[in-house]
Length: 320
Image (tube, rainbow, N blue to C red; front, side, top):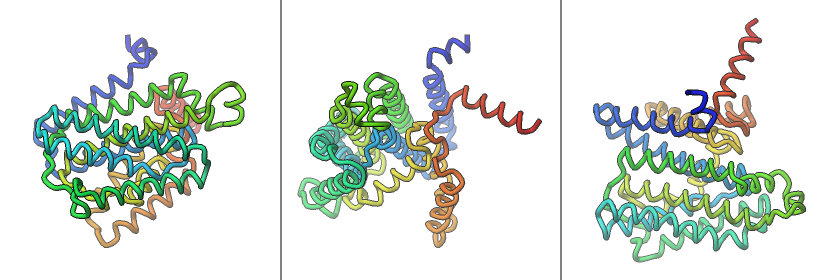
């Protein structure tokens, strides 16, 4: 029975339900105080951002530094809608509309910029994110530099886990589809992919739009939990933070992005007790990890039972 469940690829759904049940139990029993839940919320938002950026950078091979811009679009759109419709349907409408708005901007930006490659694409996407930030900084409806305050708070563990696991599962299913395999082939060799009939620009834009969509969802969750937004929250450093998670976890590994996000959240939480040296320790830890494991924690592999069994067999052979 268990083998059939694993063979049919249902393990991720079982794992998601298990994590949800454990989290719900911790919430009900009051173990998760406001500080811990705030840390958990930040972690889940970073996971959504990392797996969506990994789709663009890791699986399609497009070096993007504009993910914070799409996050800001989702955050501001969700905030403006939920402030006018302060109900759960208004919150859901805000998250969905914000994600669609981010995807639309991703489509508009992706068509011309994704013809670029490497550093040129990174500079173009970085410029796009800065343009979005400056626009929000000067719009009256977003309250300019002062930002939006008093955003209704609707995010709880149910919505947080639902959006996080849905994002991971949907992106994973896309990667396993024919479209996802086309994206991977473009990453490996774009010229060879085009020679067998794969429209490189089409699939690069598709991955870019999907990544922007989920970044918009992350922005909506951020706005609805932290109930305050200002343009400086979505600057260059925010995009770099997301990229660090992707590179640390392993470019081309969704489970690696999840593990890296959890690891960095634990390091950051532990270093709260040393505010003067926090960023120094954080940077040194990242440097050490990348020296020891330059391909990232998972490389391009995904966490699975077969991988764990193989690791166990290697350790047994090494011990014997």
